[in-house]
Length: 87
Image (spheres, rainbow, N blue to C red):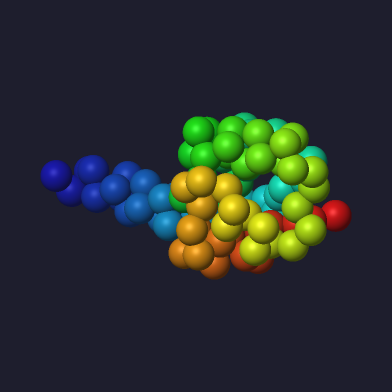
């Protein structure tokens, strides 16, 4: 049991720090895969919905436009606010 303790602590540290390692994402240019990899609470399906919305409606003018995408709510937007770019 004791020999697994250090490994457990390393895995916990990595899991906690993973969101901190995410790169900011330009939602007007990023692929679905890039969004899914770097935004919290955004899996591939939601990211694909963002890309589809962008194709149909044009570039996002502000971050709150993401709320128009099905499956994206205020909580998801707030979690990712610092990592969403609009350049």
